[in-house]
Amino acid sequence: MPESPKDIKNKEISRRTFLTTVTVALGAVGAGLSAVPFIEAMSPTKDILASGRLEVDISSLKDGELKTVIWRKQPVFILRRTPQMIEAAAGVDPSALADPASPADRVFRPDLFVCIGICTHLGCIPKFMPDRVPDTDQPGFYCPCHGGKYDTLGRRLAGPPPENLHLVPYKFETENKLLIGTEKFPGYGADVRKIDNLPKV
Ligand code: FES
Image 1 (tube, protein in one colour):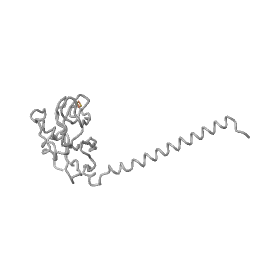
Image 2 (cartoon, helix red, strand yellow):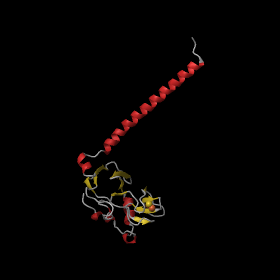
Image 3 (cartoon, helix red, strand yellow):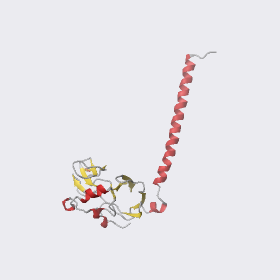
Image 4 (cartoon, helix red, strand yellow):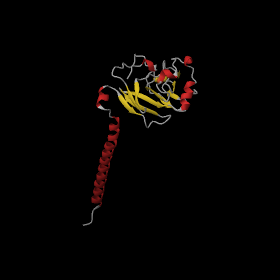
């Protein structure tokens, strides 16, 4: 017996429902699988985790690139500074800054800057400006909330931030591996603006 128009319509609806279900199911499996390597990559060893520290591999970080990791629920910026960035910041007179600091006060190694990625004004996350922070001659960080400006050493250049971006305790385990944080670091309240004043990791 030939199919009625109603039968044909019902078949079409159940075929579409089947295809939608399969697509959604496959999408969920794919998302789950793709998340696995990411979660594994973020998993620190047990002793590191227990000590509240974070191990970061920076071997793939290119010149002029910024990597952001989360440590104790805060963004930590890791910037691989180019020779041009290093030179530009070296041209800033520390005594002219609101929060005076020399390059040596801010980094262990000129090519790598590490700090808490939170503006010292009201806590926004500044944007990385690899070429130039607006209305300055420096690359660095720009906080669009109220116009806070920092160089590639996180030194406050202009705007409402009262002080430089805060540093975080870290050490080089190898040339390309960082260990960030200490068990006892009290965070805000400690002197977090000069690298020599940070607790040793
Ligand atoms: S929060 Fe960054 S300038 Fe206000």
